[in-house]
Amino acid sequence: MGPLTGFKIIELAGIGPGPFCGMLLADMGAEVIVIERASSEHVMPDVTRRGKKSIALNLKSKKGLETLLNLVEGADAVFEGFRPGVAERLGVGPEDCQKRNPKLVYGRMTGWGQTGPLSQAAGHDINYIALTGALYATGRKHEKPVPPLNLVGDYGGGAMFLAVGLLAGLLEAQKTGKGQVIDAAMTDGSALLMSMFNSFHAMGIWSTQRGSNLLDSGAHFYDTYETQDGKYVSLGSIEPQFYSLLIEKANLDPSVFGDQHNSARWPEYKEKLEVIFKTKTQAEWCELMEGSDVCFAPVLDFLEAPQHPHNVARNTYIEIDGMTQPAPAPRFSRTPSEVSHGSKAAGVDTESVLNEWGFSADKIQALKNAGALS
Image (cartoon, rainbow, N blue to C red):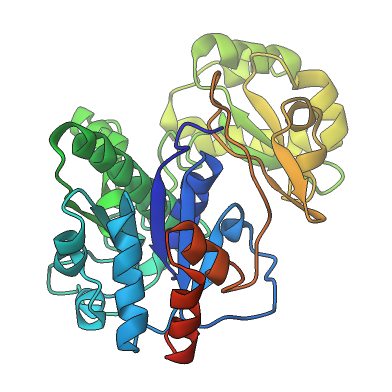
């Protein structure tokens, strides 16, 4: 029984950060009901669909829309990922829903936010993080910015902030009996993720020159290096005691590498380390450094990661329906999260969910006859 057991949350089906947010909530025990536009017999191997129930409603049907609003009356939260104004045109915007349920927390997930000159424009993760400095800062010196997958905008700046906002809204609603609207924009979230670098710049220790700073591949002691077998290892030996251990374990000459924070010498040091790390395989470097205070780890691909002994020991990855995937996080001591089931076909739970939420068999049949269920 996860910490959100007993909470009922409606997810209006979308892509990217919305489904990921819903997965997090379902992992923690919430009953997450996904409202699909159409049913399907095909089960998608989509990790973000795990633990959720799925119903298919025809929201263009008056009775289909009314069915959703009836479900809203019994929900604690609803969230959607449409462009601003779309939910209102469908008749399921915040005002429509909170008329039925004043305590409802209503989450809105967008790239640009509900307001502003770009709010109606299309976009993706790469565009949202481009606007906040996060993309510009990611990459090597004298090379173009590198998209950090969709981790910073969609998931870090989007889904995580939507989840935090919904949880905060639910806590507040329990005290006041009043719901509210959460405007979660990936531009806002990714901007906030850059807070440390605003601080560093104000301290005079961070340049806008990409790839020349402490954490952006500028420093020789905070980077990745290719090994003899064409694999990679990572170093994060920032603190002086950790850097001293790196010098010791890599058998570096202290008279050459001793000037750790002289950034003018970082390119020279990096060239020397590139040569040194190619003298051993990844496994040999792991045997020498892994588990020490060098701040070291092998660079694994996502297929190798589940096999690493540390991840195995912590059950960081699980297998559901034959698919390896990350286990729920974070971990709770008394109410552990769990995955109740893998992804389901769209609409597979329509009748059972409606029945559980108080719809009679006759009512469900009437909705079918009226074309409200799709």
